[in-house]
Image 1 (cartoon, rainbow, N blue to C red):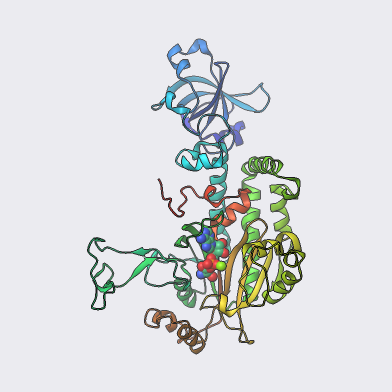
Image 2: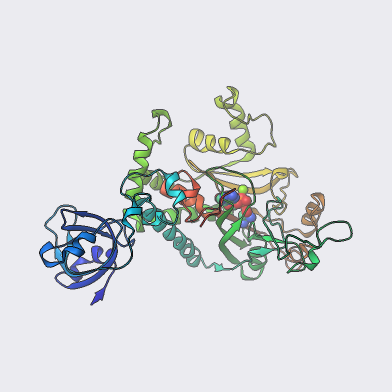
Length: 482
Ligand code: 4AD
Ligand code: MG
C-alpha cells in the first residue's frame, strides 16, 4: 500500500486517481457521521475522507472525534462536493493513539477562536492549529531560501561556536555558561570569581553573534555565512526581542559598504520572492488573518495594503538609501517631532534612533524599506570601519515597515592600528581578541557583512505582530517553558 502525505495527494491527484492509498493524520472535523476533514500538517488544506457508516463498527464511528489520530486506507476518487477536487473513500480506519476527549476542551485544539496569548501558553499544541501550521511552514521555507540564496551566490556555510569567551557586540548582554557548583563558586585573591578553575579555564558565555569568527573564515574562504542560534540577555520585553533567536550572518572579503547594502537588498528580495512562489497557500491563509486583524483596528491604524500586496511591493521597489545625518534632518523637521509626538524627541545629531523613529521614516516618510548608513561612531560597535570624517562609521541598518530594524551590518575596520586604538579607547581586552586582531596583520583586506534576525523576517512575511508567535518555543525574560 502506498503511504502518502496529504500535500502530495492534493497536488498530484491525477496520479493517484482510483488507486488505494494510505494516509494518516488528525481529525479536524467530522460532519454528519460521514465526512472527516483530515490534516497531517503537510499543507494548510485538509483531506476529505468519506466514511460509509454501514461499513464500519459503531465503536469506530463513535470514536472519530476532533483531534483523534487516524490511519486510513481508501480509494482516491473525484469529489462531487464543492471545495475539493478529490477525496478518499475509506476502506479501513485505524485509530492510532490515546485521546483524552474530556480534557480536549481545556486545550487550544478545541475548535473555536483562541487568543494568541492562550496559544502561547500551549506552545506544544499550537503546531496543530491552522495558523501556526502556516507560520512554521513559512519559517521552514524561509530558512531553506536563505541557504539556497547563499549557495547560488557561492558562499560557504560556516558553523561558528555557541559557547564563546568573547562579547562580539561589546554590549555586555551575554548569558554566562559555567560548570561551577553555584553553591560554592571558587574565588580568587581579590574576591573575583576564579574562572581559571571553571570548565573552560576562562569566563564563557552563549554567543551574541557569530560575526567575529565568520570574519576569520571570510579571510580565507572569501564569501561565508553563519546561520544559528544567538542569545541576548537584554531585558527588553517587546514584541520584537527574544533572548534566543536565529541569526543569519554573511561576511564577504573585498566588499565595501555599498556592496554590503546591495547584498542585503538582493538577499531579502530573494527570500521574500521564494515564499511568494513556494508558500502561496499558507500566505493566503495568513493574508486572511491579517485582514481580519486590520478590521479590528481603528481606521487610521490599518495597513494600507494586504499581506501579499505588501510582500510583492517590497520585492518590486528599490530600497531607499539615506545617511544617518540626512535621516536626523528629516526627523528633526518632522511634524511628529515638532509636536512632541515622539516618546524620545530628536534634538541633536549623534542620538541613537529608537524604533518609533525608524518606523516614522519607513512607514510615514518614505513608505518603503529604508537603508540607513554612516552612523555616529559612538552609538555603534567597535568593529565598524571608521569613515574619513572621523565621526561616523561605515554601518548600515535595513529598516522594514511594521518591524523597524531587520538587518544590521557594516564594513569592518580592517586597519590594524585603527582597530587596536578603538578597542583600547573603549576598554576591550586585547588578550581576548588577539586572534581577531591577527587577521588584520597578514594580508588584511576590506570586508563587510551583516546580520538578519530570522524571526524579524518571519514576522514581516507572515504579518504576525509578536515575535513570540513566529518561533516554536520563545525564550523571553521570565519565560523558558517547554
Ligand atoms: O544589529 P545586531 O545586534 O548586529 C549584530 O549582531 C552583528 N554582529 C551582525 C553582523 O554584522 N554580522 O543584530 C542583527 C540583527 C538585527 O538587525 C535584528 O534583526 C536581530 O539581529 N536581532 C534580534 N532579533 C530578535 N531578538 C533580539 N533580541 C535581537 N537582537 C538583534
Ligand atoms: Mg543592530
